[in-house]
Length: 308
Image (cartoon, rainbow, N blue to C red; front, side, top):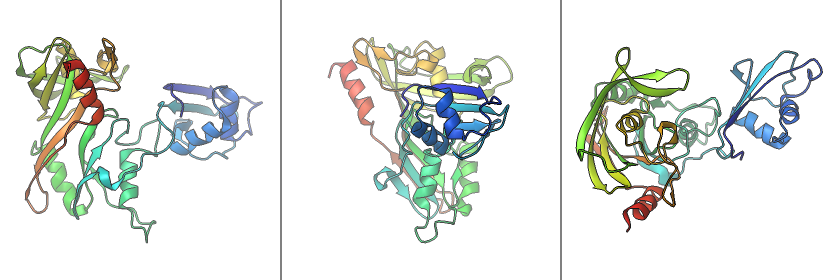
């Protein structure tokens, strides 16, 4: 793996024309071996003239524009295992997503996402050429862990989509935020919009989408508050933005001002976990109620910061 997150940009010169893509990458960046270049191409990290290219042997031409997005994560694609499955029937698949895995393709990778892992998990071993039917109606950020649901049958796609759009799904999260939050329970409501320059979300006076975040404190001291969070709406980075704007960013969420360490305790990632999901089954209409305990890394941070 390449531990540093960065972007490489280069334009092919006349002298470099005719080089294979993997040769070119190893030539322009001294930190990249040819083997690493091949792995990045295979993951889908390399773009030729703004289009993803996953062919190492492609010969380049003069003035071709190459962009390489390196996310700093392991090269090995994430593989879904039986122990990651919380629930499965003919129509739905519920997964416990680990932190550090993208939900869907990003500029840095096409392979190795949760969506790709689900597709591979569902493939018929006797008919690997057939693509499973997968509907993705919710997303979790790369460093958020926990429950995420997929529809895996055409009969369930529409109903599950409507349930999420119509606020028919109750989603609860556990988060660790900076400092002692006051009041101990409350809500944040604002219009959120994306800043195109930074790709971060923020509250705006006009032109955004409504976001509602409710919370209650489970435990707190001067270093952190452990809160349960409910989001009737589900906008990108909603929980992270609202707590950051309230002066209590999530521990580990450095993009929104959260600390990477508290005292001598390192925070490995943003402390956010999707712990509960409640909904009606889109086909059978049976009530489904799922919950997860905190993952090991969040439990470890809680013990250290609470003095247990």
